Length: 426
Image (cartoon, rainbow, N blue to C red; front, side):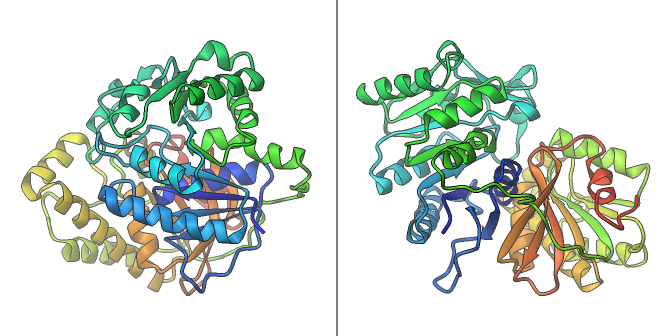
């Protein structure tokens, strides 16, 4: 039975976490949505339930997370992990705090650490403040995020506005001393009546120490980075056996495509790099605010170009264009328009024979995977830190699928993703 049960608040974040676990020796399967009563328990060391709850109403996010937890508990998981973005994407209303509070109550554990750090991708936490590269979170571009603008880098304050419980800090000087010091500091915070602890981390060594310190915790929360130390805890306990290749996937041939809905700086740069090497279509929802028309335009364009090189279809846009679309349609309607159009595109591309598909952006990934009726993803090799190829099951034709968080990946990510596959060209 699985050892670690995980709940992720979006689909790309789920694959990010699953990839981290595979890289550190755990066979991992990602399930799409709250598992139904007929869902078989995967043959895996870790199971990640991917929800589309990051920007859902608080009550919905809490309800779905508790339902996922209940299913994971029935499988016999020994520890649980609530995964959110490494940029702590949320609003002052939630959903990180309310979901974490509810999971703590259900597990009757009364305490959880919170750590979104992912040093490999430039996310670090120092004195409770989240940095993206050298910039504070609120100066990194995330302050302009269309759905979850992050205007405060102090995570103690951010989380404190969402939860009904006091939030403490395990600072850098303590983390530097190692697992025992971290464990003791969290014990003191819990004895002081604090139910949450933001834990500093600047290096992977810090994350391994935090993972070791939390070996006995029922619940951890954070980005995928803090999960890197968890497999070793299970190995130390004699519960996890060495594996030659925990990320082995079947080969899949066929045309390749990228669908991008993220408006992050990283994704916009990746589209720019791809434009010089492969066909790229940039949709303009502001000029054509009709999902059906946008999808028709994209499919007609792609139909004659699918073949030996990937095609890229993007509805990504810089902040001023996003703001203009939201002003015209409203924030929720603008997001729904883009998601529906790109889900229509994905469905049509699969009908046209695409079997290797990359999706950029958490909300876009959720819409696409739901439309394709994918039920589970077996996690394979990483393309870049936090983004693996996966083998999609339950959606009809076998296919390879990669779900990329908007902020992740090197500038040449789209090209690299397909050249690493056997038979892939770019």
